[in-house]
Figure 1 (cartoon, helix red, strand yellow):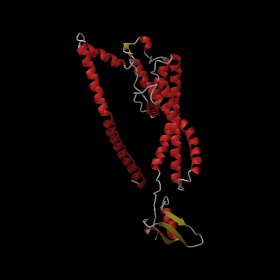
Figure 2 (figure 1 turned 180 degrees about the vertical axis):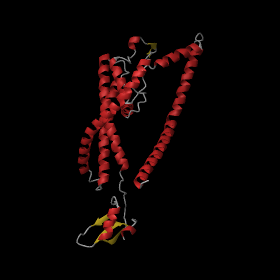
Figure 3 (figure 1 turned 90 degrees about the horizontal axis):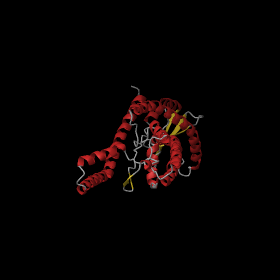
Length: 329
């Protein structure tokens, strides 16, 4: 096995171990944050049911359980409105045309909120076929749009690199800083600004709106927040609102995917170590040795500075005192 192939497998294994560790750490944090609240909610639901049964002895526990099961199977359909059973007209429509288009967008983008799903055999079969062809089509669309955005991103990145010289004179670090600035601007564009709009329309908190935007655009799609559930808005407004949200999701996906790709570039960049007083040493080698060294080396280490003087038969190499220089001698 070649050395480059071996290094690739080592990187893959290392990234796998880091990812597994990341998942376990995240699971532990989520568990500590959410477990107690889950237990409280369970206790509240059980207490509410038994309080109802004790105050209404004519109701059988089995019949109440069947009623609750039916309501849960139909999902959150705003069955209860201000303490009273709602009329059918007051409940939101999940399968009108615009809502169906919104559902189709969640399928091909793999967001899958889970707030609605096909309940018929034919609907489920069509959903499978639709997703089978729609997901690659969406991936192709995102790739093409990403290429278009990539050119603009690189242009802005090159422009910002010129203005971050005051932070660092090292080229790699300047690229990292400029990329971080662009990612922050992208966050404002596709997360913060839309979150303001969603918070006004859906009557969510601004933090909840940011949470919805990121969970949706990252295609995590938990489904705890879904737009268009505020039935106080007019039907015509909700239709236009959902269609505009579909466009926002497609545009935001492209920008967020590009941002993730740039983050991967940052993770792979070797940022120069910040040193205090560094000991340096100078060695002399003849032209033949340095030429052979350059042929055997695929890149020059950042810690090595080579001063070339073509009129002489030797070169001066200045490097850190910790750098191994036996191969140069």
